[in-house]
Length: 165
Image (cartoon, rainbow, N blue to C red):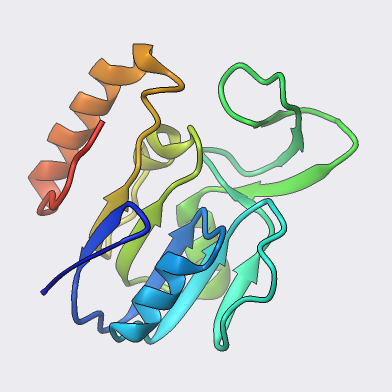
């Protein structure tokens, strides 16, 4: 069954772990739990309030690199960039995070991280069944050819359920 929630879609039932990158508001996370997610790892840099029961919440960034980032509203690419600003945040690649927590299979990966999606998709580890991505072309219209190429590449490994620009 196709589930649509929080500008994302996924196939239900979910029988495994879910990674929710950009979990603000918990709407997607709650839908994943409701549809059978056995374990949810959720990420956001903002104040998301109390996570739903059983959710492992990380105030860190999943990106294309493993180091620290600092927040700046003026950053050209995303709201986060490498640096030594006042609010340092731990960053990790998806592959590195999965190794840290000992997970090698993910039923559903959701990406809604305000511009880091392409960076994350460049190094998708094996063992992911479904991917739901929200690209932000209204913020970075020059990325359209890159997004189209990423969707084509993803289509070779996954069933692309919904692709909106």
